[in-house]
Image (cartoon, rainbow, N blue to C red; front, side, top):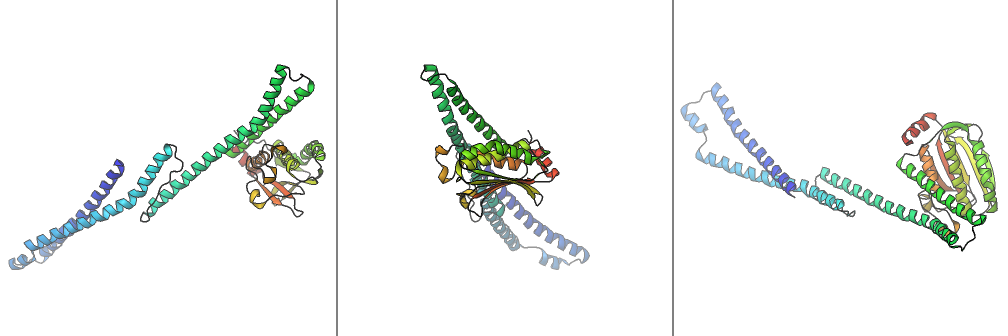
Length: 367
C-alpha cells in the first residue's frame, strides 16, 4: 500500500509539474515573442505602456495558473486511480496466492486502462492454471495411492499369512506373489512413461526397422489372452522399414490390445499398420460397445475409465491409454479415438514418416 501511495504521489506531482511547465512556457514564450517583435519594430513609450501587463492581467494569469494546476491535479488523481486500482488488486491477490489461497483473483474496474486490465486478465489466467495444476496433482496423488493400495494389501496379507503359517509356502503361493509384484512393476513403469511424456523427457531410440515383424510377434504372444476372452485377432501390417522406436510402439500396441481385452465386447479385433499422407499409423479396431464422443475427448488422460468400466472387477490401472498418448507425443505424433462404421471403437496412433521430424522431436525428449 505504501508503494501504491508513493506511485500515486509521483503521478500527481508529475502532472502538476507538466501543467506548471506548460503555463510557464506559454507566459515566457509570449514575452520572448514580443521582445523579438519590439527589437525589429521598436514602440514608443506610450505604446509600450499599453503592451505591458497591468496588475489586473497579473491577477488573471495567476488565476489561470491555479485553475490549470487544479485541473491537472484532478486529472492526475483520476489517472492514478485507473492505473493503481487494478495494480493494487493484483498485488493483494499475489499475496493471497503466496499464502496458499488459490481462489484469489484480481479485479479490474470498468475505467481501468487497457494495459492494466490486460495485466489483470493475465494474472487471473495464471491463477486458474495454478489451481488446475494443484487439483490435477491432488487427483494424481489420490489415484496413484488408490492403484498401489490393492496390490500392496494383497502382498502384505499373503506374506503375513506365510509368516504366521496360515498359508503353505508352495509354488502356487510364490507365483501369486510374483504376479502381484509384476503388476506393481508395470504400474510403476506406466507412471514413469506418462510422467516423462507429460514433461517432454520421454527417451526414444528411433531406427529404421521392419516394424510389421515386431508387431506381429508381439500380437501373437498376446493372442492367447485375447482368445481366452472371446476375441479373434486379425492383422494387416505394412511390410518394409519404418522409422520409430520399435520398443515403444510395441508397448503402445500391447496397451491398446489390453484395453480392448478388458473393456470391449468379445468379437473381432483388427490391427492395422500403414502409411498415408506422409504419416505412419497404427490402428486397432474392435466391435463395440464404442465410446461416447464426450468421453473420447479425454479417454487418453491418466486414470480415466468409462462409465461401464468403473468397477475394479475388470482390472487395469487406467494408465494404458495415457501411455499410448505419451509414446505418440514423443514421436511427434498424435492419438485419436473414434467410433467405427460397425459401431466399434477405432484407436489410432500416428507419427510423421520424415526422419528430420522424428530426430528433432527425439532430441527434445531425451534425458
